[in-house]
Amino acid sequence: MNKFLVFLEQREGIVKKSSLSTWNRVQELAALRGESVVSGILCGPLDIQQLDGTLSGDGVMYHASDDGLRLYNQKYYTSLIADIFKREACSALFFADTAMSRDLAPRLSVRLQASLLSGCSFVETDAAGGCVRSVYSGSFLASFVPKQRERIYILSSRVPEAAYFSGGHLEFRSLDTQSFTAEDLFPVVRRIVMREGSPDVAEASIIVAGGRGMRSAESFARLEQLAALLGGSVGASRTAVDEGWRPHAEQIGQTGKTVAPVLYFACGISGAAQHLAGIGDAGIVVAINSDRHAPIFDVADYGIVGDVHLVLPKLIDSLKEFLKKK
Ligand SMILES: Cc1cc2nc3c(=O)[nH]c(=O)nc-3n(C[C@H](O)[C@H](O)[C@H](O)COP(=O)(O)OP(=O)(O)OC[C@H]3O[C@@H](n4cnc5c(N)ncnc54)[C@H](O)[C@@H]3O)c2cc1C
Image (cartoon, rainbow, N blue to C red; front, side, top):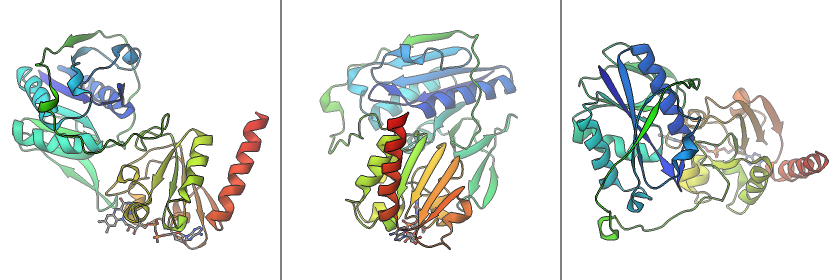
């Protein structure tokens, strides 16, 4: 019997879309493997009713709701996940590809003596449990086979969405943990709260991203305005982040986040391979660039050759007019 454990991540009490989708993908994998059961683990206080109608199949969901786990804590999250993994004699642990999982998974790999397979775009259903991931900024696909019986997978957002199927019974079990006191926690140096109502760039369905062509931090106000009108989030190229115009949390690409929005605006972004590595799953790509030969136009569905500082105000005004008439 294979036992799979899925870590579901919450921020501000809301479970991440990418975690819900990871759960559903693992349920699908378990169904294909046969004789497999799925459990999940949630850390931090949250209203579990939000999960109604989102999680496929059946299984057990462990919930450690102590208020001390509201914010991510490496030490306690690692212990809680490792304890459940061992207690349930699981063979595989699954994460969505997020900043938190990139921190947690390597620690757990050492703690559990488990093979770590990250960036998996496909997981084999056979007993070897290998995975396929893209390498060299998406230029090649490579297969990896884990050495250990215990495995940890970080699923890329490129794994095709699994369809939600109901019918099973999900049992919630509270995890009785010690109460985590402030002294137990690592000090919080700075807490960055994203614009209210604006999803994390990795989860956003509309992204308005800017690069060096934006020229300054101040000019990103236009991208924020456009994102707010469209109900999307602001993203950035590495150059915009290195210049200090935007936080690293918004960086898209090889060393940033992989995104899969339905609509992606690239404003003053050249389209370097390392940037494109993060937007391979974007739906419609709209590029605004003053250089008609910029590589971003090779992947764009719509291209506007022009100065972003002239095009964006016009685009914003037209959109406002359009929304007023709706
Ligand atoms: C190991 C490694 C990892 C990397 N990881 C990442 C990553 O995760 N994400 C990432 O983005 N990059 C990454 N990079 C960097 C990447 O190679 C590029 O340097 C970077 O993406 C370029 O950012 P940019 O497009 O904003 O800037 P540039 O390449 O300088 O392009 C600016 C673009 O703006 C246009 N422009 C200028 N002025 C205007 C204007 N007024 N109006 C309209 N267009 C204008 C220009 O024509 C140009 O096309 C990585 C590099 C390495 C080596």
